[in-house]
Length: 324
Image (cartoon, rainbow, N blue to C red; front, side, top):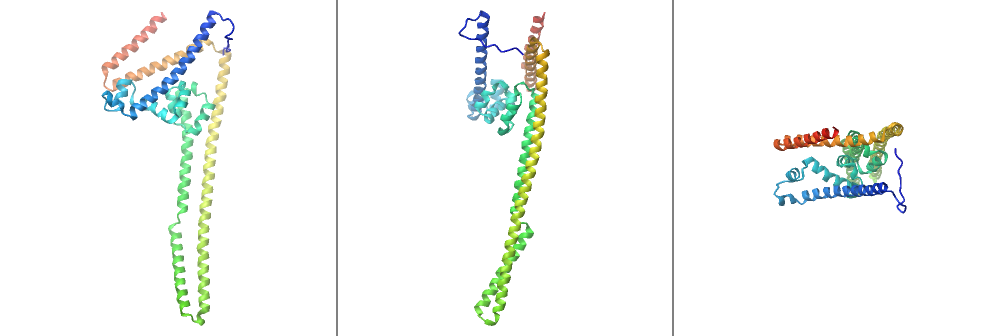
């Protein structure tokens, strides 16, 4: 990898160095402008959809407007809007260089995991497939946690409501208490000294029934607490295991990337590396144009599809002529 050279602007520079410095600042300015343009593009699409301003241009729906006036398929237009709504303008502009597809996949990762993904992975240089696999792992772990939380809440709800059998027993005890109270009140109203022992026995039985009712309620609360504790422990262990697997895989990926970087430093030709980068970009763009042509043909616009195919073919022919 070439060493970065920093020029002292107070010293005299050669003409070539001046051109290089000027071009560098232009590139940085263009990068910032591109990021701002993407943010404004997302905001514009969102406003056009939310305020239904497309109707003022003669379109019945937002989809027709994006396809015919902007040149975007419905899914692509909604991807731009979704990225803005989920990530926010600041995050979007700061990471615009990742491209809309990777930003869309990042938006599907929960916010509390997103920063960790960016810190521990070279997202910018990841392929789309690698990014998809990474996104699936994080979303799967969060879905598992959500399912465990739902199961815990469901169990808690079930335990908080007494079972039919417990309810029947408690109701029977309460009815028995009321009956005994009524008998005691009737006995006290007669005020017959000979029945005082029977009244004491009744009171003891009432106290005993009250105590049993309290014990049943305590046992129910203990069961609820024990079930909650077990559910929390199980959920925590499963999530920790999932996170451990993810961290192990991430460490392996970082190690492989480090080895690849070492090999590139030792053996790579800078010109070949630059060519590979631009070749991948051209190949990606050609594939994107072919997808657009296929979509246009699928929508029944055969004439437009032929024109676009001819334009792409002429571009290919131009490359052949340049290579001669």
